[in-house]
Figure 1 (tube, helix red, strand yellow):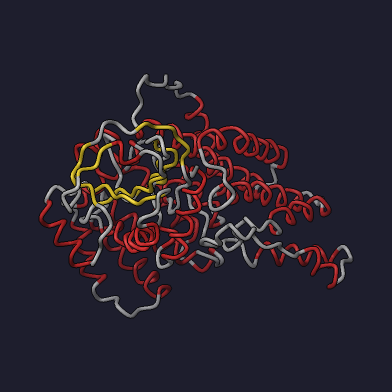
Figure 2 (tube, one colour):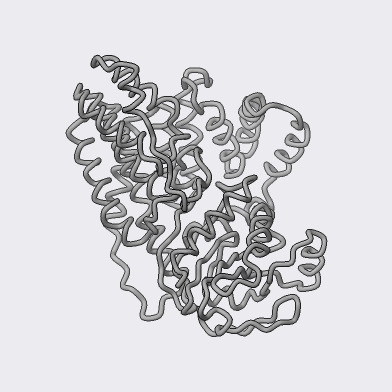
Length: 450
């Protein structure tokens, strides 16, 4: 995370003096009311001017990539001008402008997803995995910060997307023996590193990762002509109520249906075979669907499993109440780290308020927010204007003790002993669905209720 944070800070600081940012803002002001696809096409066209004028602008190249991502989503890459050549130009320039090993895996994911430059993507991924394998293993600190613990998880987390993309590329290239070995590595990662560093409660994160293993296994079986095996793997992927199928539907379901009919299955048999049992009654539905993210463009971070004792705390909230570590004893606390200056943090605040109202007065769970705002008066005005009443502890120095290089917009689940047990970097997946977000947070907190 610290590497990603440092990169983000560098990008923000560079963008402050980047003329491409001003050009984008001027252009964006003219796009209100334009549908998303037309907007992406226009962005592709205008960004060609930006990168020609400012070839060292990371921002300009990233916007050009965003246009490509939007235009190629769910469509044949031939619909995008110069297909493979354009993708290669865009991603190679982003790699050129960023530190080594910070974007290569994402570029490979772009190419394999778009169906272009697959051989080059395979080489990029093999090089990145070899580099990662060659890194010295860090000796755990005697007193790690929360950031140190999350760093360990994020580093190993990058491995999954690289392995998944590599297997996908190898299937595409008909390198079946290599693909089988890579899929075995995916399974080993799920059974090892994921269970060690991430929360495997079957709600939002682990099912998606595990589903990818079954999807890869099914795709390999189909490519090799093992139709019965493919049927079994597809079924494991599609008939588990915890798996989110939105990013693959209707593709995998249609493939499975065609395969079922090809081997002589009846409509009645298909209805029984494809039935998905409901989730247990105590499990919230949460947010379903969404494109599986690339490592360097993550829109969803799984809950990181940690055990981090909060350091001594004595902070006054905006109402004048002083909070100490004793206030975190004997109950589960849901903590949100934010800033009133962080506009991406704002969508989650409505859910935080709903949650705070729902658990108010309960002896087993509470909601607290930590703010890094340094102007207390402006923070009070922000809360009043928005009508928020949840507790806010504003102390940037305390946050920096826990997270020396912090990322706002993250949630913690703190148990009754005052230890952070779960951490999630962002919550973009719940934008516009506060009720689902509230239920998911309560569900996670319930793991630590006495």
